[in-house]
Length: 349
Ligand code: AOF
Ligand code: ZN
Image 1: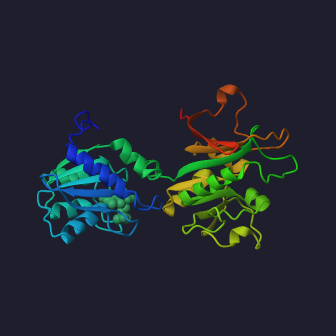
Image 2: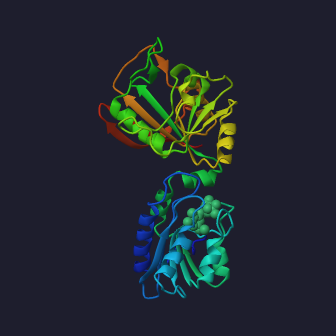
Image 3: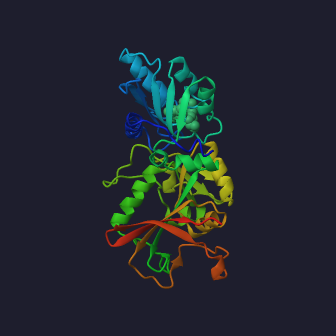
């Protein structure tokens, strides 16, 4: 971005409209292939002509929904300003290009929060400018990026965003020496972890964990009932699951990726339009993702329990000297009953 473009010229009424667009965008789904987007149409006098938000892949984009809302109110959008949380798309995907829809509606000015990082869809700002429309990009950009969550880094990196979940004793163990592990963390932590499952598109475990723990990998509510939208359940490794495994029971679709290469797992999931992956273990898979530099965020639930000679949370990372340690930056520390949740991101070199 040039220094000229980084100066955003947006009127107070446009910033108010952007705040509202960010708010209504949150009515859309927080996960899935498409981002959450909101749009507010303003008259030259600053009155709201229409508003809309994106309800998920395959449904109209926010701009088109806002134009339809204005048409429903019987107001003309000729000369209007469109305030949009994401740069209008310039492609025909599941729906048509928003840039063309805005031009056809006679919109004269567009205020955008975040440029679209999707190379397939991007280019709307340029298309609109070349047709004589004024375009401002970067209004309330921090809020706009926060709205997009894991979708933004996932599209920027061309692979799903990866959260690694650990649940350990204070001395970093995930099981006692005999393998028993129920329960190290408290019920509060386990509920919190279930909510995290509900937020992601896919949960990944290694075949070792699938065979030993026989997990169901479902997102359940406090009453133990399955939540409405279940994440994809992904098992990584070469061994087969027994026919009676809980993973064959009710829940999200089960995918078995027969590889040990984390990059291949992510390529496979990206092809299924997965944007956010939760890696739940075990120690071998966790180490493989970390060693490959494919962990974006760690959620470590740590319980005030000591296990001594138990099983470590992480297999060999290839760290033999302190200079090679994998360092992270702590983003937040959340007390959960007797436990704490540490959210941290690996430092990139
Ligand atoms: C917009 N407004 O409301 C959204 C946009 O397959 P499609 O047609 O739904 O296109 C999805 C892509 O379009 C998505 O990856 C992102 O780049 C952009 N989403 N764009 O102008 C919207 N949801
Ligand atoms: Zn669009």
